[in-house]
Every structure is written in C-alpha cells, then in structure tokens.
Image (cartoon, rainbow, N blue to C red; front, top):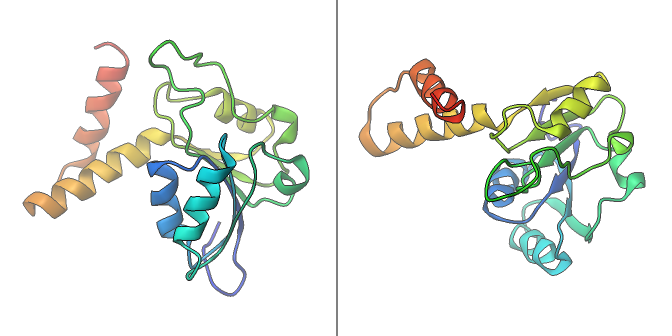
Length: 167
C-alpha cells in the first residue's frame, strides 16, 4: 500500500493508545482513517488531536463490518492477542470473516510473532506484517537518534527472537 495524497488508502485502526497515536502520526496527512476503540471517547480524543491534519474519525467502540469491508489497511494497535499477563494469545480483535479482500493487515503485537489475526489474514490470502519488525526498527531508530550509532538491525532482530523463544 502506497501512502500518497493522490489516492489516500482507507485505514482501519484498532485501538487508541500510544501505539495508535504513533500510527496516526504517520497516517495523518496520507490516509483516510477510522478508529475503533473499546472506549469510544478515547478514540474520539485521539482523532481530535489530529483534527487539523487529517481525515480521521472515531466511529464506534466495535469494528463494524461495513467499514472494515472498504479498508485497504487494518492496523491492530491493541494488546488483543498479546501473550502476556494471562491474556489469551489465540484471541483476535476481529473475526476472520470480517477481514476485507485485498487488505493489508498489520498487527503491532510482537508476542507471539504470528498472532491469530495474522494467521487468519494469511489464511484469507492477505498480506501481513507483524509487530516484531516495527519493534526492531523503532529500537534501531531510537538508538540512532540518541547515540548517533548506526545499529546492526539483524542483531537487533535476533535478540528479541531469542528472548521471545525463551533462549
């Protein structure tokens, strides 16, 4: 998916926390974005923060199939499916049947590497991106900004893979 001003992609963003805010910072001038969050007022507050820069709206506390069907990109920025603190890692924020044809599905969750959402999307023939790459590149960017060092991204990728696999 190309983010351009000529034909902005339609993005569905699940969640309204810090990760969602980071995604909106990138998407704000480049996409039509609909935010779904468990607490609608938080989604509305997040959309309001970007009101001067974007076509962003909070529409419902629950993802609506009609709005999902028009999405080019779906981004999960929630902790649903994260394997931590007793959460069910096999849970998905969306039912598999709701995934739109041709969409790209991005899950910011990095543990497990292949979440239920990503597995469902892959089974539907959709392109996917997991959260580990985002975590690695965010860390590499931070290291570069704070230290001026040019990090070895492959080493940075291997370290969380070892840690997440218990090695």
